[in-house]
Image (tube, rainbow, N blue to C red; front, top):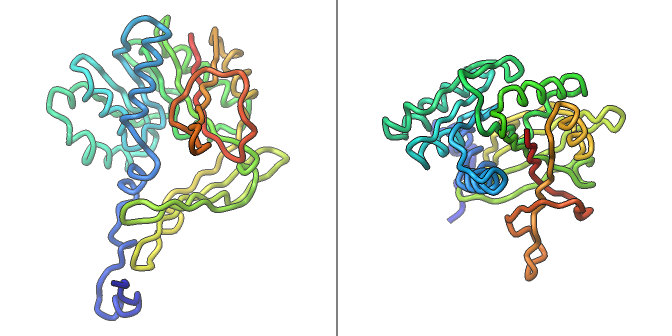
Length: 279
């Protein structure tokens, strides 16, 4: 059955699906997979350090989904989420933190602060800088300064986990669409400046009734390359930085969701990988 015409909906005073949508819910469904992130971080730390990580800090935490997943998984896990946006932290408290059992909820702290200024009562085992948010720092001085602060906030054997994206399509001004249950996700490279690496990206959402939630999220970043990131991390004091590259499914030729240390990657049109920096 085809959806009713949008104009007809408007005449009857009904709100469109876009007007009723919660952009944070849509983001979590289309962008984040906290269970997979938890498994990768937990397993990799254990393999590197021969012990289990307990204390985690999630920088640029947004709705703090990973913090909550971390506290939910183990009874002695603690998590600190840091974000400068009061509204998104409020959403995280009301929707994610509130879903935890009381004991787990007590082991999560959400802090409104600049990630370059935040301090924690004690050094942590793991710091996360995921979803490419560190790219908000557009100069070597600023990004290097952030990495130095991360280094200081880690335990003696602590580890920083980051993700990165690239490939020749990342330099194009383009849109990429994917379907999800009940909505469509659109990732847009709206602008790229090859002289300084500045990139502007948007996330839009589309719905079966024809309505759209345009520019639900906008990011103004510098598109850092893997060599630059590795160099800055070493300069900040990290003893070893490894790129974890995604394996390939032999049947489909697509990524298999499994990441392992690599020194050679494929020149794919687009890729996402992890950087793991050891103190």
